[in-house]
Image 1: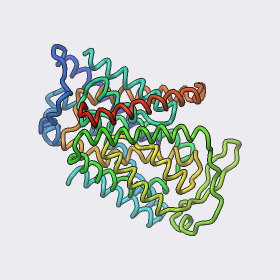
Image 2: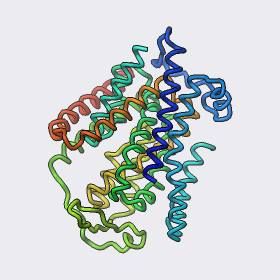
Image 3: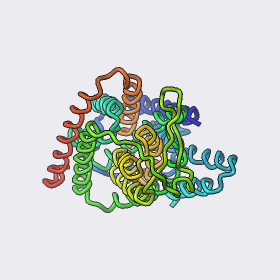
Image 4: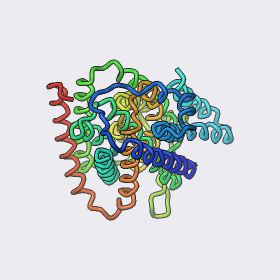
Length: 110
Length: 277
């Protein structure tokens, strides 16, 4: 389980790094402005549109996909815990991990 | 390009110091981004939250293998922290940014105080008896480093659970791991041995942060251009820090870091009141 977590983080970092290089190459000329908050464009906030941009090699979308992979790593860990407790026939903790998983899902799909 | 490199370098140092002192990189990252780089606090919080997930998942892996962290205690308390994190993330959309800065400053002052205390008063493990500890299967043991094992039981579970909800709320509100509050709940309230509580807390942080990350993403707090140097920097710094953890003179470093946090906390509170952030 520990290995899996590390592999997830490494893979996500690799995707973010690739996106970062593309991003820097595309935005070499102009400086970014983070002083005023404008929220992100809707494309980068929804998974389906994000995938569409990702396939076209949009740098911001590649970074955002890496970030999604990173967020998925601890969520996967909770799912594996559900399976692990089920194998040990520990009903109490199957329920406990399922509650945690449900909260995580709510955060993404509310 | 210059901005990105500077943010990367700053995040690297934050991650390194966070790992060496055990306080986590997130606490200094948000003040660094807002005070030094003049980033809007919402973008800073979003980027910081992502780096928190990266470092927690990266570092936790090593500990789970060595048998220090308790998966059951962690999972049970994650119910509280994830509910708190969702609540905190909702709050962060409604709280004015100047208040975010002030609350953040207060958390920094508290972390500084805690770190200063921890260096002086190590706690003795709890040896009493708590029936709920066994019923919830939270009692356990960990390797003591000399080939044997240390047994422990857990106490004050409702108090610990409530404090964890608070830790989750702060994490969702401010984009930090709030490891300091998690350790407080487990060390001081539930009396879990230090080695178990720090590693368990570390592995809970990623799950807690993931609970608010979905909401942050939807609200557009996570900017790819800012998040990528921050995430890679903090992750790199913390991995370096973990490697040199044994060799470094931690006590001096911790004192310096405590002073830095104290100063940043005051600065954030002042900025919050004068409306500069």
